[in-house]
Length: 175
Figure 1 (cartoon, rainbow, N blue to C red):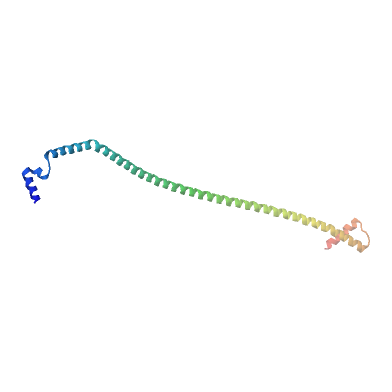
Figure 2 (cartoon, rainbow, N blue to C red):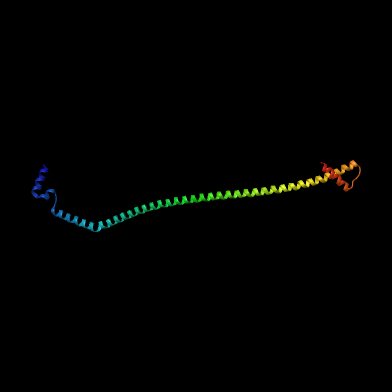
């Protein structure tokens, strides 16, 4: 029943009053709202918009820097890989040259050792030939003494050096 009274009361006093609104308050609230919207639009939103735009620009710049840094990193990695490859190739060339040089030095050492060995063998043969000739000479002299001693014993007399030499020569020739 009370609802019925409210509706009847609203119909008698006018449309805004029926809704519980006062026209003066509504106009005052509308002016205050428009004034507040103008103040906010004039002095609050522009700095906020500038701050947001600056932050957006900063984030975009950071994203560009990140992209540039990634590209630079990729290029640096490629350059490092190329440098490493070149270094390995250089090291391989140096190692090959070192092996070739070592082989040449080894061959030269073998050649010198072979030459030295040949020289030592030649010197040893020469020394052996001299030693054999000396031993033969000593053997002949010893043999001559023995033959002279044997001849003395056989003949029973001492022979002079002319007869000794003839007898020794005859004995040695018979051999």
